[in-house]
Length: 251
Ligand SMILES: Nc1ncnc2c1ncn2[C@@H]1O[C@H](COP(=O)(O)OP(=O)(O)O)[C@@H](O)[C@H]1O
Ligand SMILES: [Mg+2]
Image (cartoon, rainbow, N blue to C red):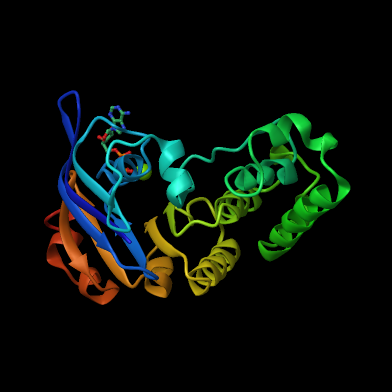
C-alpha cells in the first residue's frame, strides 16, 4: 500500500530523516515509534506532500507519488490527522466534519452554493454527516464550536473527518496523545473499526498499550534513522529501542 525508498530530509544542519525505508502492507496497522524529535512527523509530512524538499521516493499502491502536493496525494486516497489538531474554531463540529466530504461528494462550489442545491442532495449530505457523528460518538457535540468541546471529542472529530474522505491509507499522528484512559480505549475501538472496514493505517504513537492492541508491525526511528522493525514483542525487547528511549545505562 505504501513504500518509501531512501528518504532523506535536512533542515539546515539537522538531518531529520536519513535513508528511511518503510513498507506498509494493505490492511495492516503499522506503528511508527521513537523519541521526540526522531523525525516521525517529518516522515508523515513527506508522505502527505507537506514537505517536498527531500530526496528519495514514495510509492502509494505502486504509483510514484514523490514530490506531489498535499491536495493531489489526498485525492489519490491518503488522508491524515495532525499531532497539533487542525480544526476550524469559528464553526461547529458538524461544519468541520463537512470538509471531509470535499473530496468525494461535494466539489468546492458546494460551499458557495449549498442552499441552491436541491433538497434531496442536501438531505443526503446531512444523513452522511449524522451517521458519521454517531459512528464516532460525537453527535451530542455537533452544534457546539470546538472551544466548547473536550479535547477527546476534537481528536475523534479529526479522525471522523479523515474517514469521510474514504481513504485507502490513513496516517494518524499521535492519536492517543492528550487522551485519558477512557478516551484512549474508545480511540482504540474506533481505529479497529476503521481497520475492519479495510483501511490501511500508519500511526505515530508512544502509548505502548495502544501499540500492543493495534499494531501488526512497528518501526522505531531515532535521530532520523530506522533502528528497528518487527512485531510489538520484538520491538519491546530490542536493546537499540530501549537505549533510544531510556539512554544507555538505564537500558
Ligand atoms: N519545519 C522544520 N524546520 C526545521 N526543523 C524542523 C522542522 N520540522 C521538524 N524539524 C526538526 O526535525 C527533527 C524531527 O522533528 P519531528 O519530525 O517533528 O520529530 P517527531 O515527530 O519524531 O517528534 C527535530 O529536530 C525538529 O526540530
Ligand atoms: Mg511528531
